[in-house]
Length: 111
Length: 113
Image (tube, rainbow over all chains, first blue to last red; front, side):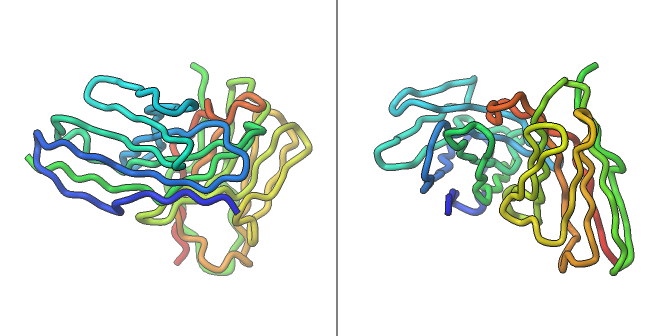
């Protein structure tokens, strides 16, 4: 059975801090790993990673994948209160018809 | 505007009643998905459909049923057999084989009293 585990479960930081969110996976047929941000409604897409060692970057957010060790990290630098959300990691199967989600990391950024 | 709609946004039902959640998309996507999310948890796949008149069970299909009579519509029925139906339900759609590009609807929060 495919499995995606995120850590930590929750995190409280102050504005300006840097955070690292972790995602490890055990998947039979891997195609890609995705990160989403969810603020009380539908998740919004952040990154899709398919290759090891290539960092994806968008503003203060960045992510990298290690296919040998089967994990990914999401970094957020200079955090802002608007970064407060649940961050979800998901792994896509080879057929491209299913995502397996982790349990999410709840991030709270205090002013 | 293209997108996915789910209705209603909030739904209350008494225990033992079946309830149907609506999901409609006008993105011309062949594939549609239903997820369940419990507080503090990730999304779990209930059912998915790759084409009209065909659907497959996901990880937690027990107590749920779906139909896919039209490309645009993928309603989910939460039956009385579902032991703990109170949750947030998300519908999504994508092109076939492109689940990594799926669009999510706004969700329906179901509370069973």
